Amino acid sequence: MVIYEGHKETERGLQRNIPPPATPIGNLLFQSGCIWFKDWYFTGGYKEGSVKLQGEKTANKEARRKALVEIHQELSDFLNC
Image (cartoon, rainbow, N blue to C red):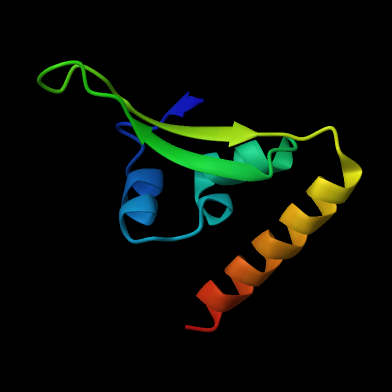
């Protein structure tokens, strides 16, 4: 997980539904091998947590291949809007 609060480009991108791998921090996670992304905010009262982008890897080659196909499609769809 990476806290992205204060990183304006990533914040704005995720708020505008840009696919995580197309944001600066999401791209760093993708380049490090992450194929699954989740945008998190855990509250513990009033604004006690920070927003985080989680990236996960898989050890399963077939799951990785399928996820990469889905990411490719999601990015293609986004760019063709």
